[in-house]
Image 1 (cartoon, rainbow, N blue to C red):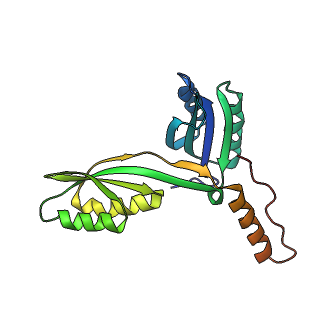
Image 2: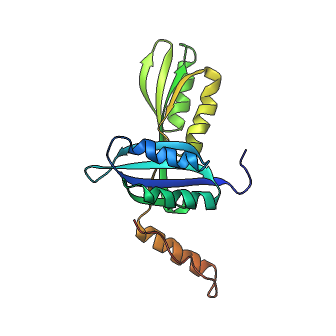
Image 3: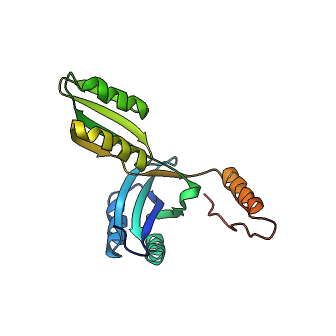
Length: 191
């Protein structure tokens, strides 16, 4: 249940790849009373820099304040918040499902419908790998639940800003569809 005024925000932070940086970033967000619902960290395209992608629940003001505080950390190079229409977001999940000889073919059919992959088969279970948005993964899990889900590992959201050309085309399209007197969105944060 969402609290009124709160919504999910997708942020990425480019940080120095040093011990303790993740702890400092998470502690700062936690101190502001903001819940981190998803966190993914990995090396970036630049040596010695890592990228954190996190989804936080909060109102616009508290997220803006947390972003300003993140910039005060010496190891933080850049912080970006993405609007849902500006981002390509995916999550990876591994799901271990209980199977029997009788149920295995039905589980495989469900996995195929979702374009997921079977990455391990054992006598009493199958491990499924799926990539997609949170809703796709949740839908697959709902269908597999009656068979018995033994274990789930989810990566958390990974996000990347769409190309500027795509954003400019959308802006132009929205302006023309709203009529000649409509105002188009004005500014997108650069990468």
